[in-house]
Image (cartoon, rainbow, N blue to C red):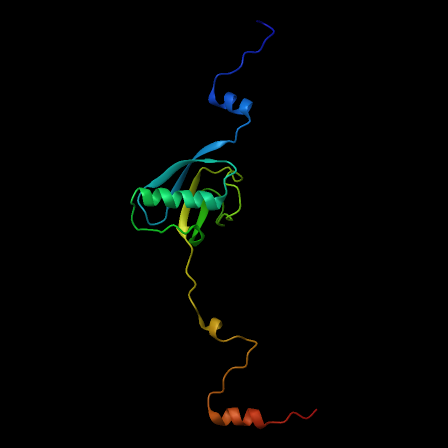
Length: 140
């Protein structure tokens, strides 16, 4: 038995031998809610599926405020890495993080630039200026 190497009996050794997907226990803090959600994900699960799982678990636990179930209305951030939201199609395991923050996407608030396009002519303020502009001739 000296020449033979004994196989390990730990979870990681069994995992590596079976070539299964890595699984992680992650923590998702929902902005505006007390307490975190904890659940297990596969390393190749997409951010969208993790967001959907978090929303379902949140609703199942009857937490407040109610968030709904549309995962496209939410952004998932790595709690320890940068300030950019994860893309919906990214795999959750690529950043190596175990702590995440889930928050609602900001709603689009219209401002003046939405109403007045720089390529469109602005409306005349009175009929005289409109008439002068429409009757003017450009001679080159």
